[in-house]
Length: 307
Ligand code: 6CS
Ligand code: FE
Image (cartoon, rainbow, N blue to C red; front, side, top):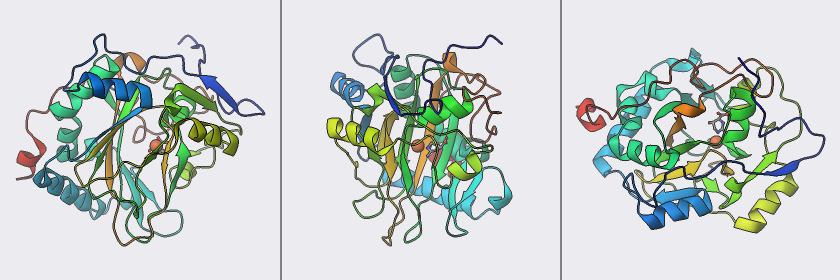
């Protein structure tokens, strides 16, 4: 396998670096499509995220939330897919939900999501990663600021920035319960982090990430340029964000859970190579390596599946 040029080196320098993005944000060859208007596409390109309030109907959200609770209660705790909170024994995240659940498989392949992903990525797509972050009331801990791409590049071997996440709110995201926060415009800069990745880093990073996170000055520079936005809305709202958009969320000390399900779409042309950080790849439950069969639209909607 030829050694690919590392266009986005990180965790190799002694000082943090703010490097330029070398890839398009929107790969589509036309100003609108996939159900997105020209204004929405332009907003996404400029800001690195797009907020679609109440994208799914209430009855659809009920089905997804019930399925998340079913998975969380299904004794999965020993599986590779389950991540426990750092300061308690409650479930923080469940990964690979598209493989564990026909309902979440159908969601990830919902034509309304798939057409947007294909348009913005400009290609056929597959699921690089899916997960639910439960962030329960009182005890759901923070996800510190990070670029997903920095981790997916260094630890999973994702070559270029041609992937995006769709975060679907399963409960209301409000100002009290640790909503997803994004830094508009941050996707255009690549923060090359300092520090050397520990072995089996994911066992720690998925609970509380300390490597592959921006230094204070770099984060402050990105926020000075673009500010911080926390899209708030009812369950069923969707945040689409670029793989390199800086994001995070605070701990939830409110009584309101902040549960979201994430579908991560990667271009089939951007399949994982050997991790650029030189360590062994992370498990298949966190980063799909085997099959890059392009996603096809779900044959049955997830509401029908749940009946
Ligand atoms: O490392 C990862 O792939 C995971 N970590 C974070 C904080 N966001 C993306 C993903 O869930
Ligand atoms: Fe993330």
